[in-house]
Length: 214
Ligand SMILES: C[S@@+](CC[C@H](N)C(=O)[O-])C[C@H]1O[C@@H](n2cnc3c(N)ncnc32)[C@H](O)[C@@H]1O
Image (tube, helix red, strand yellow):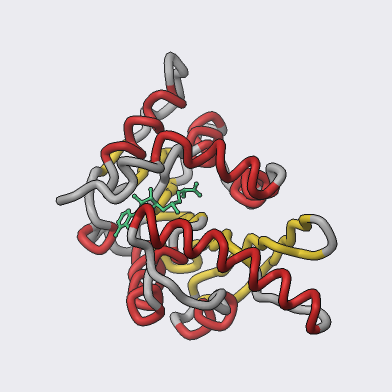
């Protein structure tokens, strides 16, 4: 299968740091304080995986999944010579093929669900929820739903659309409005426990949502 991130993959994290003034990285590490040593955690569409590496440093049993060989190569570069209590397990495959249901204490989807068209996004979110244990957690970190007055909303939508259009052009990601992840998490049976927001310039641009499986 064609690696959709072969061009942009090597620069992905650098671009996200510049584009968000590092707020994306803060968003991706926001819920790591929930991880306990030896927890089973999964990172879907891990990319360069600073979040997954930090989770392994906390002593978690980390599994990462990504379709892109380029992204996994960068991920391994990030690991370098680091050693962890539990070696990180890496799956080079489609997340929908991972069938370890009710296995994970925490499942992370950081800037992952936004690559899909809505119907598929909800299907993937539902699948991630099935991978979590009963009362386990699913964390979605992504662009937050535009809010505020018309001008504020206009700039938030423009900001998302620039990124969306760029990744549509270079990685064939889906074109769509910002999703209401909190609503969709409720639809797949997750109870929202905490939401942390990350500001850029004048308003909140990103959020990390912690949902618990009932
Ligand atoms: C927008 S990037 C986000 C990467 C990382 N989570 C981050 O926050 O920086 C989306 C990632 O999901 C991966 N991906 C896309 N579709 C996938 C699928 N069906 N299964 C597994 N990984 C997928 C891509 O290869 C890419 O690494």
